[in-house]
Structures are given as structure tokens and as C-alpha cells.
Length: 336
Image (cartoon, rainbow, N blue to C red; front, side, top):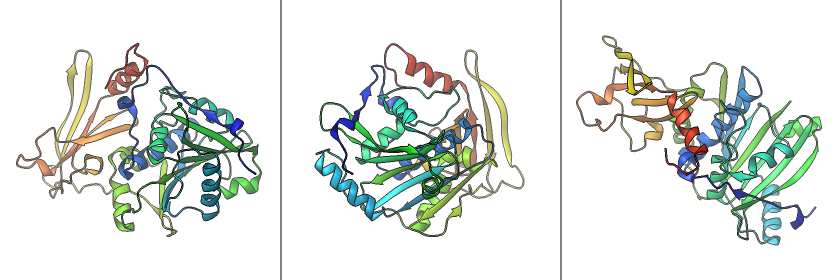
């Protein structure tokens, strides 16, 4: 069945939205994967579930879907990505989405998540990922309805467009085809780049992503990774081996500004870390955390100091979460 132009829905930009505040989207997997997995984690929490599973797969697209996508988007003259060799698919068993939820959360750039403690950036960072790649798809089940929505850059002045390809009762066969027994969602990000790292490197990358640390360390979450149709493997964080003589260097609360305190924990590893160029996958250094979020791992410019390569730990300051939300609600755009 051909898509109809009148079925297209166009997004808009909320006036106070400022991309640098929240967007982590891009074309690199160290940006794409955290967006998908943290969204899935938030959906599980919003669904009121204690334990939840997230399935992440990286591999070739379905040929039948790709052929239909290419034909429909060419006919509609949308400036979307038409062909790709690899895609990232993330499936969760959280609260799920239906057409109403997708409309509400894809309607405008810069809207906050519905729940104050929701860490997922669906409708904000995820759209940046889709726009950067030039294509996107979300499929979900919620309250007995199934939706499949395509997302792509708009041909006119609007920043993007989306269309509900399916909006129907969620039959059990359709749910199982998505890998869902109950509610949940499956998000697909086509990758514009022609190559992805080899399987071993991909597993290492996902297990060491700083932004995924809270999820990988949570016994109530399971993250499974499947690469190019290989058997899924449970992803675990490769925790450092502590120094046997002095594992803990510092653990105390420090006042970082008037009325704002942070807990700083500094530990010592048995062996020095290899400091790669990316903070996104750094095992050493102090992880800056607020609420459910892990922002980055840093040594605050002391990478070259003696012993710095054995330091790891965290700086936890929940005021960062309040600061980000205040910036989004500010009458004028702010960069946090």
C-alpha cells in the first residue's frame, strides 16, 4: 500500500530549544548506542517494571523493508537516506508506544520527557540521531495498539517529517514478530557510514560506554548484544581490579557551590588503564553522574600526572539534573 502525502506529519522546533543542551546524536556509534539504550532503560522504568531486558543488534537491514522504504521515499521525493548496509536496532520490554504517544513526543524539538525522572531522550536526542543519519523507524505496542512510524528529513521548510505506516490492533503474531510478548518498542537507526567495527571491537565498545555504566551495573537490567546475526551475548561492564593494598583513596562529600554538594569517590586500580582518545569509553578517571545519568569520565586535565592512569571512581552531583532542566525551561536558550 503506497504512502499518502496527506498522511505525513511535520515536526516543528520549540522556540527555547537549543541543541547543544541535550543532543548527543550524530553518526558515531558512541553517540547512537547510548541514545537507544538509555531510551529503552527509561521506557522500562516508566512502565513500572523492576526487571527489564534490552536487546541491541547491529547488522544488515531487512531486504524487503529496505526495498519498500527506497521506493516510497523516492516517490515522495523526501531527502532521506535511501540505501544502507548496517543498522542498529534496540528493542525493550518497557511501557511501549502507540500512535498517540509518537505524535506527542515527535511533535516538536525541545519538549521535555513527560516524567520528571525519565532519563530517556526519545523525542529529543533520538530525533537528532535520526536526522543525522537521514532515516529512522520506531515500532511499538501499547494499550493494545501497534504502531510503525517512519521518520525522515522533510522536503520543505520543516526540519523533519514522519508517517504512521501501521496503526492497528496489536495481534499476538505481530507482537511476536517485533520480539515483544507484551508492551514495548523497537527503534531502528540506519547507519549512513559504509562500515562498522569488527564484532570484537563492537562488544568492547558497548561494554565500556560510560553513559551505559548505570544500566550495566544495575542488577535489574539486562543488555543483550547481537552482531551480524550472531547469537546474542549478555553485556557486562569490565570492572577494574582494585589495588590490593590501597583500593580506596577518597570518599567524602564536597561543597562545589553554595548549597550544592557532590560525593566524590576516588579508587585505585591494580594496573594502569590504557587512556584512549575518547572519554565516551574510558574505564579510568572519575565518572560524572547525576540521577540515572553518567555524563563522562574525566581526569580534569591530570592525565599526565604520575599515578593518574590508575585512578577511577565517580563524582555524583544530582544538582546537574536540575541545572539541565532549568536551562530547558529558561526564557532564553542556555548551554549547560
